[in-house]
Length: 533
Image (cartoon, rainbow, N blue to C red; front, side, top):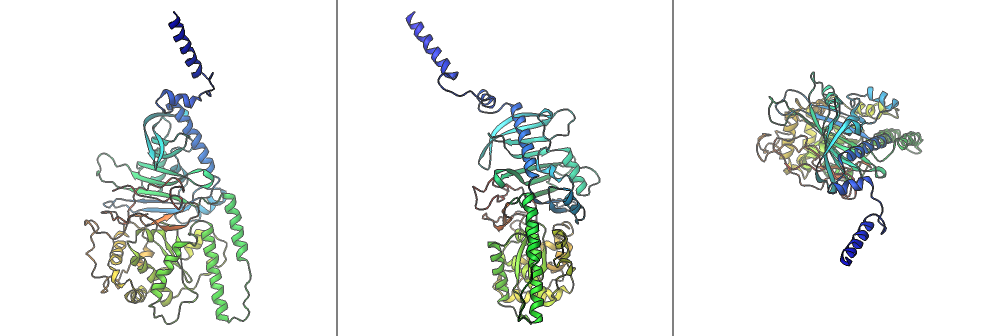
C-alpha cells in the first residue's frame, strides 16, 4: 500500500507540473495544434493565418508605389506574338488616368497576380497540409488550397512559415486566366499557372517581387512548354507619400537659374541641353523607370572610354557621353543628347562585354554621324515619365552610315578579336524579332540589328559559327535575367554573381526566378536566381 501511495503522489506531481503548477505558461491554440499534430498547425488554423496575412500584405502594398513589368512569351512553334507592359502597379485616381494615356499600359487588376487571392477568406477555402519544406532556407509548411463551392478561388499551394507569413504561392485562378488572356489578345480564354515569390523589404514588410507564369496546355496539345511569362516589381524604397514629396523636389530642383557669365553662346546652348538631360534623368529615376547612378554605370563608362580611345570623329563629343540603365526587360537603346539609355534586357541577354560594346558603339556612332537634338517635348515638360521616355524613341534612318562608323570603332578597339558572339547576338535578334515583337521592338532591330549586314559581314564577325539556335553548345543570347541583379528597394543594378550557363533553345527566353527572400543573405536585396535546367 505504501508503494502504491508513493506512485500516486508522483503521478499527481507530474500531472500538476504539466498544468502550469510548476510555472509553465498556458499553450496557445496554435501551439496546442502544433503539439497535437506533430509540430504543425491545424488545417483550419492555417487558413485563418493565410487570410490575415493576405489582408495585411495587400494593405501594405497599397502604401507603396512600386513599378512593375509584365511579359508573356509564346512558344517557339507558335504563331502568336509576345506581349509586354510596364508602369505603376498600384493604381490611384491620378495614376489610373496616367495608365490609360500610356502606350501598352499594365492591365487593370494586375494586382491579382501578386497574391493567391487578394480577398482571401478562410470561410471560402479548404486547406490541407502536405509536407514540411523550406523556401530559400526558411522553414515552411506546404498547404494545398481548394475553394469551396462555386467561389472563384485559388487552386494550388501556399508556403506558410511559423509566423503566419506566406513566402510563396503556386496555382491557378479563373480571374487570372481571364486577365492574362484578355491582355495578351487571345480570343478564347486560356489557362495559366502562376507562382509568386515574396521578399522582406521596406520596413520589414513582405512584398511579392517576382511572378512566373506558365500556360497550361490542353490535353490534345503538344506536351512541350508553350507560353511563358513573368512579372517583376521594384521601387519599394519609398512609400506613396514619400514619392509625392520626391516629385515636388525634382520640379523645384530644376527650376533654377544658371550663372553663364563669360560663356559663349555655344557653351550656353550646350549647358542648357545638359540641364534638359539632367531633368529627364531625374524624373525617370524618381519614378522608378531608370536605375540611379551606381557602380555598374562605372563599368558602362569604361566600355565607352575604351571605344572613344580609338575614335576618329570629326569633332569630339562634348559634353562627355554618359550611360544609364533602363529598368525594362525589353531590348532598348535610346539617346538623350549625350546620354545613352540602355535597358536591363540588353545587358541581361548579351553574352559578353563585346556584345554590350557593340550596342554602345552604335549609340556613339549615331551621336557622331547624325546627332539628334533633344526634342522640346521633354525640355522641362511636366509629363508622366513614360511619356518622356516615348518622346525619345526615333525611327531608324541612314543606318548603314551609322553601322560603318560603329564598325570603325569596334575594329580598332580591344574588342575586335571578340566579336563572334556579338555577331550571333545580331543574328538572334533578327531571327526572333518577328515573333517577339514587344521584347525586341522593330525600332531596336532597325537601329541595332545590322539588317544590311555591315557588321556581320566584316572580317571580325564573319568567323562566327553558323547561326543555329537549337544546336547543342550554341547560343546567340542568354535568357532574361541571366546577368543583372536588381535591388528592389534602391533600384540599383549590378552584375549577378552566378555562372552564365547558356540553355538550349532559351535565347531571349523566360526562366523561373528563385529570388532570395531578404537582404540579409546577399549584398543587394533580392537577387534573382534561376531554376536548374
